[in-house]
Structure formats: C-alpha cells, structure tokens
Length: 91
Length: 282
Image 1 (tube, each protein chain N blue to C red):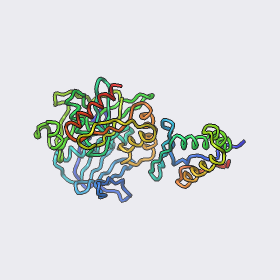
Image 2 (cartoon, rainbow over the protein chains, first blue to last red):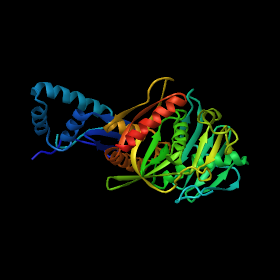
Image 3 (tube, each protein chain N blue to C red):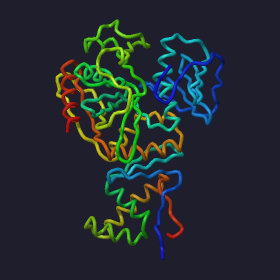
C-alpha cells in the first residue's frame, strides 16, 4: 500500500489558517502563503497517495483530470524548487 | 524599571560589549541603511544601535551598555527595544502595536512605524477608550480565546501628533524626539492587566478628507499582517518562530483582523475612531 508522495521538510512549518496555508522556511527565514485551492492540493498530496489526491481534487473542483494534473504539477514543481516540499520514498 | 508583570529590565553596568562576529538580524531604515543589528544568542541578546550604543541583555533583564547613556535614551532603549525582545525570547507572543479597550473588548493597532498608531490611540483615549500602551502587545492564546496586555503603560507622541490631538507640548517626559506620557498619571482610563482581544486593526494612513474604512482580512493575509509586526522576526530563532506561526494561526481564527484606513488630520482621527468603535461593538 502506497503512502503520500510528498512531505514537508523538517525545516518547513506548514500551518493551515482558515482554509489557507502559511509555509515558513525556518532555515532561510522565508514566509509563503497558499490560497484555499493551493492549500487543499498540498494537504491532500501530503496525506494520501498521489492518484487518490488527484481523483479527490477532480471531484471537488469539477475539472478534467489532465487540466488538474497540469495545475498540480506546476504547483508541486514550484514548491519543490523552493524547498517547501520533498518527495517521499513511496513515490 | 518595571516593564511588565513578567520581566524587569535595568542597566547593571557600563563596560565594553562583545559584539558577535556572526551575521546579525539587521533593522533597516526606509533608505536601506542599518539602524540596528541584533544577535539572539543562547544566553543573551546583543543589540548594536548604529551610532548610539551596543547593549547586552541577559534573560533575567540585566543589561550592560558599552557607554554611558542619558536617562532619556536609556529609558527608550530599555522600554521600547529590550523589553519586548526579552519577553519574546521568553516565549511570549509579542507584537509591535498599541492596546486599547472599550466595553471590555480590546483592540490592538498594528502597522509600520509612523502610520499613526499612537496618534489614533491618543485620540481614542480622549474619547473614552481605555489605553494599555502604544508600543508592545503581549498576546496570550488559550483554547481559542486570546487576551492582550501592553508591554508598558506609556504613550509616545511626536510634537506634531500631540498638537493634533490637543495635548500640551510640555506634557509628559522627553523621549528621543517625542513626549512619553504615563497612562496611569493621566487621569484618563488606563489598564495594564490582560483584556479579552476582540480586534486587530492594521493602521494605514489615508489622504486628508477621505473617510475611514475597515477592510477585513482572513487566512494568510491576516496571518502575514500579524507575523510582520512580531518582535520574534527580529530574533530569527527557529523554534520561537514555529510557536509564533502556530499561535498567530489561532489568533487569526479567534479574533477579527483587518486594515483600518486612517485619514490624516483631526477629522480623520474622529472618523477612524468611529469605525473602530463600530467594529469592536459587533
């Protein structure tokens, strides 16, 4: 059974605030914010396998899987580049 | 000098202060020049105020300065800089802001220096609000309820601000270009104990003649507004910041946060006070 494909690094504090999300990189002392949709995507990706997350998000936002996947990958790439997310062993 | 129920700060001795060679957290003026360098070390806090003095403060409130200071400057550095930072080092959640209260509901005014927090506080004070102080606010977060206590019971006004609100220029004591009024000597309502926090308003100056307005902030926008005015960011200590981010998340979900536009001039203060009064009553 596979687990979440992504996790927050230990140096990153993620705090959900009223449905949105604050991300604080404690090493670089940089502060980021995600809106409701971005927060929802990241929460699901760090809590369940990628396929389950995509399926759930497609239902919630009533969007075609290829469109959602493209948006998701763009967000994930940005977060990986910024060091705010890491891939897990289960990927 | 009794700064709060939790900490006393006092100058213990004058002797050279060992300024660390590691990278400091720098406080910058609007023109990008440094006005203060800070090092939060495991056992002490070191602050180097450009051209004024270097200070070393231990967590018990004992302060060493590297040169004699005038009483006015010593009071300013201890009350307005060392005290909130030491409270923050001790784990208190401290934001740079003024504390007001009306009908048992407290308001914290935050915002960049020079935006008019103290001037609006003075005006509201004259209109019957209870004043805690205008510099630091200690937030106590318990099970979704938030209370607030000012770090020190004083109000500092520039001569222009004092004139605007009708306070005589000679009132209070000199405080590095401003006048410091002690709230408990004023005869007006004052409070140093905790009060239930109802509203956080980020003060933003607006043009003369406009009407004051309150714009609610939620989620990350509200959190960022509060995070930006914490004293903890000056300390840059990972574990403290972790706790600050989490506690501010609770604050944002428990109380109203928003931007308060404050038109310049006496009429603008009246307009902003009326908006604050309305918001704190709802």
